[in-house]
Image (cartoon, rainbow, N blue to C red; front, side, top):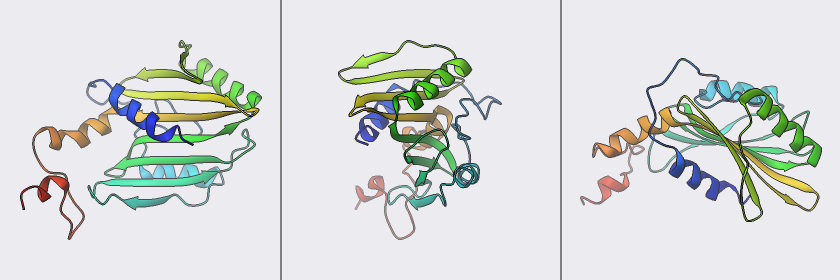
Length: 191
């Protein structure tokens, strides 16, 4: 799953300034997950997909941020699918589903996304392919590469409004909230 870090970096860097939040909470609803879903909604979807419990840890740097993970069993994917998400104030900012899809499973996913959200041009960089949809300040990105008879696939859901609200205090020069007893990086500089 080496796609996570470069993908997350690309997601953050390519999310343009966004308009005010709209009344479309289920934009890009895929497998019961969507950008901007609450932790409770994601946890419920994980249980429905036989993923057990969503495991979350608070960030050591910003107490508003929770990093969560789960391993999912999905009826239309033969192998496990890993879920990783970053929630800010208990709302999903970035959620990624990743796994090795058989070629027919990947084709069904890609075709289904195109049917529901429209056709977009696939872009290629080396052995990796990517398709991206943007709507009302939210983004969905499908990334894949073929390897050893499977398609290593990740599907990321990003809510730009959540990320913008998280970044607003930093842009205004207000330090991020640190967990009790710890100082944020901004606070440490003043010692």
